[in-house]
Image (cartoon, rainbow, N blue to C red; front, side):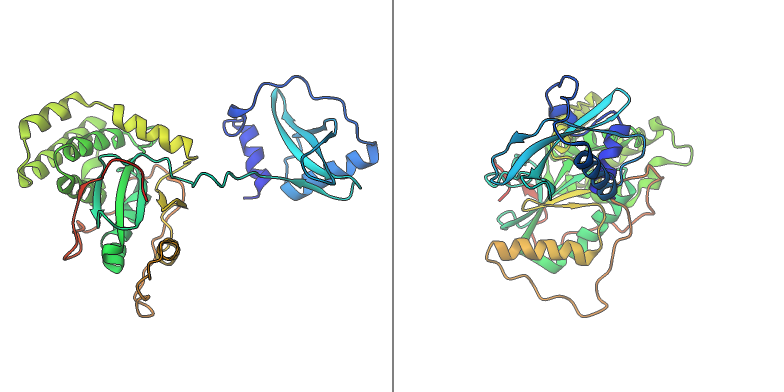
Length: 349
């Protein structure tokens, strides 16, 4: 999808993205561009960014910019009452039009994600952290989870650690929030049992959804599975029952708010030492991102497996709300690796 096809989509959706942070503007200023140049600019914008025909373009008044040889040219896109203003750059000789995207190099993408107290799988002291915003009902999340455990964990061993954050898409997944609450009730007592629960849920979504797909049936199944895992892990079942009954969504909603601030549009969404990886990507793409993170930390990635030994994960960046994926094996931690623990206070490395 081109950049302006996406922008046109924002207009169609009521400017849900991007315009929230903009201050209200009055009607567009009158154009200070001669008609012939104005037409060339409009044609270039429509052609380059594939704007839909009913989107109107209005040019504002040129102003000096901070870049030598260029002026700032406000361009207003509108459809009915919906508008979005872009600050373009136009060269002094009127031969070049550009759009600048500023990037703050003092902040790393994903560096603000709060992982305090989150269960860890892998080496707690690893230099590379894989943070996954996960929806326990999402079929693509289940596929990504199956790719991470055990294949990716086995391949990288103690070089990496995994941390999951909650991002249940409640508008399409009716039991995802309940699953996150139950998972966090277990995490409050044991990181190891938390991961066992997540493994089971991602591997048995059809069992949880049931044939009638009634939320109450799914909730009961989730509570049963959580209690079974608690029994196996010798947890305080009384405390667990109180937590499950309360169904406090505060922690999950805080995590979802973080995901929204990071621009998450679907699940799964991974941050590998700050590098964003969207969707259930093929294994080679996932491992390439991990290798880059390891090299940046001065670590040597393990050699690739023999040709034909890798697998790819089918899927889409965005969930479709389809029924849960077919059950995948209940993943176990790789031999000799720490299975889970509690994350230290602070942010990922």
